[in-house]
Length: 227
Image (cartoon, rainbow, N blue to C red; front, side):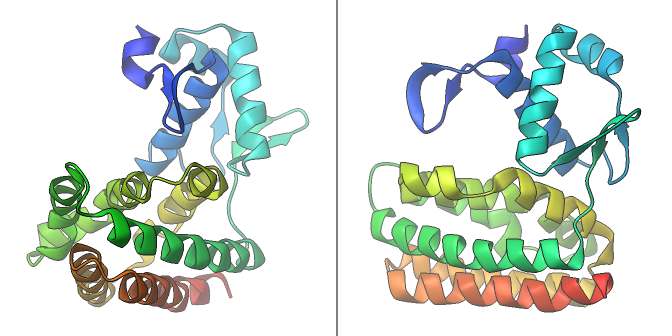
């Protein structure tokens, strides 16, 4: 059933039921991250209703949510199309992500010793900081979302969670997936190691510094491809 596949509660409001359009929007966003949907691809309502087992009206509401989040564009006579980020879009997004991710890293460092947080974060960071072979390096691009989501969960700040533009971040990761070289990926391993080490040491200031620096390097690696 759709409920078991996509979940029934918001992460920031435990126990509150999530409407079907939100579940469908979340499913499509995850599909973007997995590269099931690519930039410029048209989303066919009838296909989505069949794939997700929901009504066409639910799909239409979900597409409106995605349009409001900047993931799709509703084009007259064409329907919903997966958006591509322009240079200006990407610059603004990365500037915001730098600040919010830095804050998330700081808060995660402050909370790392609560409950299972250390164990959870170590599990999420392992594929990133231990990557050495070609196959392991390639996995970095698919493991980043889990790493940041775990960081955000440990940060445990509902306002930060609401402010974080995760759907657009997933769109960014997908759009630039094929542009990163092995040299870029090895540099990213070092950056993730620095962030992780600071968080596990409980150093909020260093964690924020390294997280912001990583987003700055991300801009340097990706934005030239849009110029």
